[in-house]
Length: 169
View 1 (tube, rainbow, N blue to C red):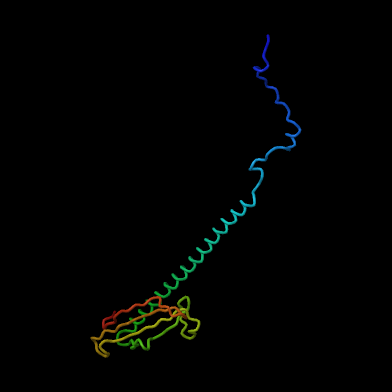
View 2 (view 1 turned 135 degrees about the vertical axis):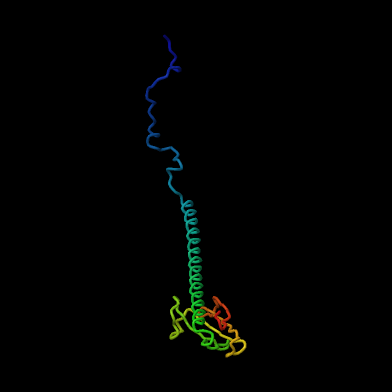
């Protein structure tokens, strides 16, 4: 029985590594065992900074949109409230207030009346009432215009005009 050693399969243990192989000297380390390089940290930091700056800009835009929407809501409520007060006063009891000398009231950021301290007011509500033909004619039409402006800039937020007649608006 002559067996050729090259064809025999053995389950013996593989030959031991050399001393150089066991100590790790002379081996090339794989990429995953090297850690993170400076360039990778720099790129990751740049991406993070870009994302943060976009988020901060978006936050400021959304905050300003929210503030503008709040101004418009308060202005429309003040406008509606003022027009309702004119209707309640009635056709004959509403005083004339031409465009040259409108009735003016000041309101705070939440719509609170601040006529006594207009320096701290957020909104200025101007109301004009002009009759055509002149009163006391019962056939007269009275043009009521309510304008709400933001103070101190005076930027008009909303304006409405309607006719008041002997029977109502």
